[in-house]
Amino acid sequence: MRALAQLAVQARLAPRGGPPLGRGQLGGGPLEGRKPVAPGTDGGQSVPMRPDLRLRPLNDDDEAEALAAHAELAADDFSFLLDHDTARPWAEHVQLHRRIRDGVDLPADRVRGAFLLATTDDDVVGRVPVRFELNDWLATQGGHIGYGVRPGRRGQGYATEILRQALVVARSEGVGAALLTCDPDNEASAAVILHNGGVEDEPHTDAAGTTKRRFWIA
Ligand SMILES: CC(C)(COP(=O)(O)OP(=O)(O)OC[C@H]1O[C@@H](n2cnc3c(N)ncnc32)[C@H](O)[C@@H]1OP(=O)(O)O)[C@@H](O)C(=O)NCCC(=O)NCCS
Image 1 (cartoon, protein in one colour):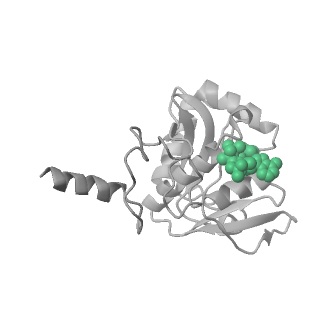
Image 2 (tube, protein in one colour; image 1 turned 90 degrees about the horizontal axis):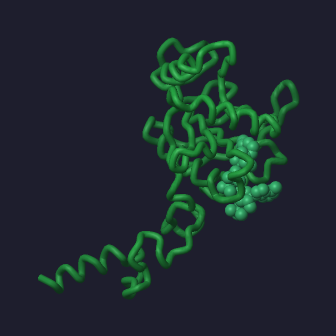
């Protein structure tokens, strides 16, 4: 019985196609002995770079933090909040995103999707809208997923983890291959996409002359 249990443990720890890991190689905790690496860079054996990160919908208590993040990201000419109207109560903004997620009363130029905050404990680190479908603009310029991280939290792997989790959300809603786009000079964003297995497609330039690099993640 003990031998069987030992075999089961070894089978669980063995890398696919390789020998079982020796005692102490994995250690006591899930990350001990393993360097966190970006997804897609180590043959599928990766662990999350930021296991502390959670994606969740907006709620009625998020106004102050979300507005602070919105002001910070304005310096990058990037809108943290989408469809936000300062003249209207925050609760209406939360309701609007619930309707967009549920596909209720969608404006003509909108598709169903989730607007998610990226948090650690309850600090707001960033945000990510996940679109469950593409319209013409999304298929060429916007893509399925768009992330932003607050300036003070950058360079710590958060965007890479946000995209990893957002892909799971997209797939759970039936998105097959996800389209990601970025500005040609946004090397940090391109790195995040490549860390998650992005394969580059043709860029697209719209009528106004705006060019986007385009990547697919299967
Ligand atoms: C792009 C952005 C989301 C990256 O967030 P982040 O949390 O710092 O990203 P990560 O820490 O997960 O990874 C960034 C990667 O880009 C690299 N990077 C960062 N700045 C870079 C730069 N100027 N040039 C090249 N690579 C850069 C990092 O080294 C890292 O790669 P590595 O893991 O191989 O070292 C963040 O800068 C941001 O919110 N920018 C404004 C909004 C935006 O541009 N959003 C993307 C829209 S497509």
